[in-house]
Image (cartoon, rainbow, N blue to C red):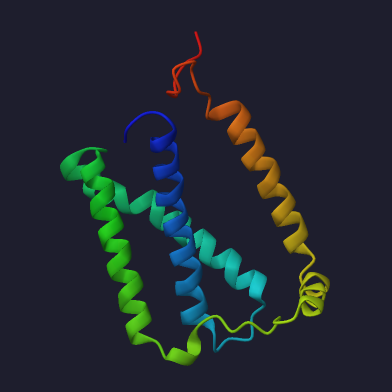
Length: 145
């Protein structure tokens, strides 16, 4: 990927696609189960992250860890996502039972771990921005020497 802020944004979008598609896949596959929304989100994000980590490795055996290997992994993820969407019932999507703002308070009351997860994400994103994704004076990422 290219260096700089464009490369960082591309990498985050690439990762987020795997996580969000993993969450949607788990909601579609597990909707008939009586599981909480938070558990399905957690399971889906773990599934998407595992796909994000392992799919490029399959192609890296043939192409090394190049942009081509990551694009091939992205194509496979899109195909898996489409296959799951087509093979599951339309009713098996994410059903939002919290439509009014007052009902979101019920969501937080029923799923208190969501507060911890959100706070942890905010702290993680802040630390990533201030300690890992460091920009040089020319706007490119790299060592600040």
